[in-house]
Structures are given as structure tokens and as C-alpha cells.
Length: 345
Ligand code: ASP
Image (cartoon, rainbow, N blue to C red; front, side, top):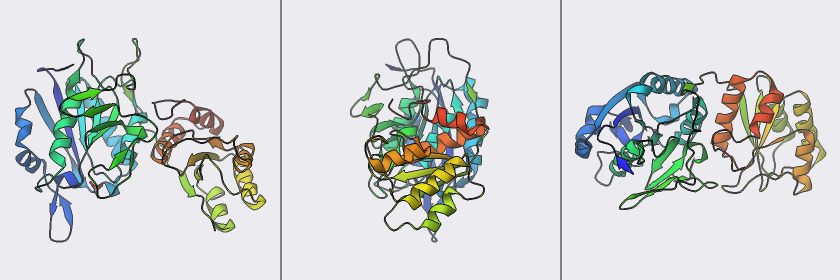
């Protein structure tokens, strides 16, 4: 593995804690020059690092699909000029944005590495410096044949590189904020960065040229099943106007309430042609609707298994597939396929 002297990296700054300072009324983003001042280590890289700053810079809680489109278009516009891209992003929605980009960028041959931090880069105990420096190293890493080591959308955080569409934020305060519960890390950083080549997805030898998809259909609702859920709540979501798909966050291996009132609503919703995607509330493991009667009734009603996808990954996959296809049956078929490493099978 080499970090080529000829590499050129584009650092895309969208906002987030990494570049924030205390305004007296809470943390607000500061400009990119201040990040450079705080991380003089960046000057030690022997290759070119350019930057692009979003306007306005945002707390990632304000991320909307429009920003993902802007990111995708920017990467497309700059694709031939850089060997890799590092996206500085707030941690709160980083897993959503990385999931979305994984579907929106097609035939990717270059790394797109998201990173951020739990403490601003200007604070003494910041985790931002290591995250940023290592993310750049990953984005510029090439194999002995000069190909990118990680031609994927991934998140680098706290010494781990994980696939973007497998990531979930699990801790609001610890430096170890992200997990990829159903997929091993793509790389781990100690005194050197060890790449897990068996897990990294490499493009086929004759891959189509890089392209982007910016049509997203966001008519998705998420319904978390819980004891005490009322018939009215279930009806409002599963049969609601303007909702094309529902992510049903179920118990354990994909189980929900077996009472007829609930299965009747699910059946009515599916019969109306709505897409219902079953994703487990559990952090790890997968949906198996053949195991329990409570899961079987969902399958019989027409619910699609999300396998071991995360909610963030499932939401992004739905946005993307529904944006591409008007036919809900086609979307359902594609939901069961592994498109970008988002499910294990
Ligand atoms: N609220 C911040 C954001 O997501 C949190 C962070 O960056 O860690 O932008």
C-alpha cells in the first residue's frame, strides 16, 4: 500500500462539531481557514489537499436530501481532478448522509470518506485531528497497482473505517460514536492502517463510468412498533396520505403485534400498493419472517424483509429506489437485493 505523492484530495466541509466554536449561544460552525490553523499537521501531507466549503455550513441535524444532491453533483464535477474525497460532516446524521451517497454514487472507483468529531477541532482533547488526518490518509491510499484501497463511501471515526451504509451512531458522548453491527470494519487504524480487503467492495474489471443518481423520492415514514401502540397511530402511518413506503421497525427477528387489528392494517396498506420494509429494532442481527408466527403474518401480508440493513441504510435505499422507479413492485424486488453492500446476503 502506498500513499502516492501524486494524490490529490478534495476536502469537503459541510459543518458539524468538528469545525464549531462556542458563540456564547451554543456551538456554531467556523470557517475552513480556522480548521487549517487548528490542524497544522495537514501541511505535512506531501500531496495536494484542496477544499470546498458548503454555504451555509450546518449542524448536520439540518441535513436534507438537497444537500446530498449537492454533494453528489460536486463529487461528479470534481471526480477526474482528485484521487479521493473527504467529507467533514456532523456526526448526528453522518450515517444517513453516507448511506444516501452510497446509493447515489455509481461505479465508484475512488474513496469518499466521511468524518467529523465529538469535540471541536479547536478544543484541547479533540478527537477531530486524528479523525481528519487518518480520513485523508485512507482517501489517498492506493494499492501497489495504483488503485484506490477503499473505492467506497465509508465513515472513518475513532480508529475504524466502516462502510457508510452499515453505520449507525450509537453514542452521543463517547469518542467511539459509530458502529457497523452487521459488517466488519473495512480498516482499523493502529500504528498503521490495516485494510480488510476481504470486506472492501472493488469495482468489476470493466465497470461503467462513474455516474450519479439525484432523483430521490422521500415519501417514507418510519413506524417503530412498541407495546401500547394504538390502532389510530398505526393507521395514520400505514395508510397515511402522501406516504409511499413505511419502514416498520420491528422486534427481534422481525416480529410485530400478531393481533388481527394490526395485521389487518398492514394487509390493507400492502393491498393499496404501499411498500412496507421490515427492519429490526435490534442493533445487530437480521429479519427472518419465517421464524415466528408474529413475523410470518407480516410476510403473508406482503411486507418486504430488510434483512440486516440499518434504518439509515433502509431509508436511503428507499429514497433512491423510489426516485429511480415508479413501479412499487420493482422497488420491492430491488429492496431484497444487495446493491451497495448494505445487506449481508
Ligand atoms: N450536532 C452536531 C452535528 O451533527 C454533532 C456533531 O457533529 O458531532 O452537526
